Length: 477
Ligand code: ARG
Ligand code: ZN
Image (tube, rainbow, N blue to C red):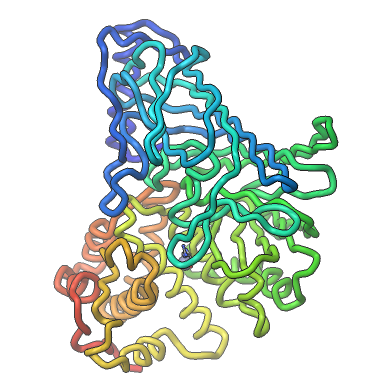
């Protein structure tokens, strides 16, 4: 679902118009009274032209996966409920590598074609603008997990199951989707696995049902809109720890039994971290919380909605609560307020890093201002200063400056506008764009509105200009 007031109004008008003209009940596929036009093969991202698609807006995914760890074979059925935003003669989904065995649109068999990540679906008849329609894709195969930004992403087999996660590349490796954070949707994820294994995903565990042949289906619901890359599946042997926080958030952590004490102790601090972050950012945006630690080599932590995944290596040298702070901060920055374009990645990583800085100050380590000063010691000629956090370039999506110079920008903003205005900017930002998407320009205008200052020069120097800002340390330490 793409949530913006303008968009919602346009859609409502379109629905009404479609109903009047075509008189078709929502849910059926309407013949459009014209041949329509193909939906575009990309949503319009600045870095990934083929990511996502155009011509429709997904409301809900029901992803049903059967996975056999013995062979790594995945059998999938994904049901997508979407609203057409134009008359569609055909439309695309993103899906890589798996073999499609059937597709229906509105219950009618559809034909399809494949090219790279694009799965082009041609319904039996065009879909009218504004109509809600349902697509069912059946598919199977051994999902891939190529290198993406220096680490494997996709479906990574482990010795007792599989780990399906990644950013930005992951959804297309296991379910067909409109794969871009601009089109968020609610999810039901049903994972069918051999009895004895556990299957973890986002949101709330709604049930476990034996389905015959020695298999059990684990059913998970995420009822808050979620970006496609934040959906995950982890299958294997796990110990589940469940509890409920004082304000009713359901906690479910999953640890591979071989995971050490430091990882467990760090993740068990989730509730305390949540209280800290709520004090700075406002209420936790979701109803469920947790963490997953599996055993696999390499890898990175990822903020999968409600339940981040952490690599065991992150806890090799002891507890790592700052990492938990980082991934939980993403629940606000990235997951509730999502990127409208991947080039704005600093809105995720800069804020998550800044949350670590706040935690550092709070726990008696360096303050955010001390950290700003420390990073400002990097000499101007170092390559660190060549990466601009807003629009770092597709190859530098997760480069250190995106994280660190992003956080520096926020601390410099804080000293420029003052504490009260800074936290008002942050809270307003989160409230205004909750469950939706936002851009850097929106952040800049909000900062200007709240502070009453003209800040385009400030942001231009910190976010968009190659080279070390001068002065670098703003404010006194
Ligand atoms: N959002 C992740 C984090 O919090 C970024 C991981 C990206 N790394 C990668 N290889 N894809 O750090
Ligand atoms: Zn991050």
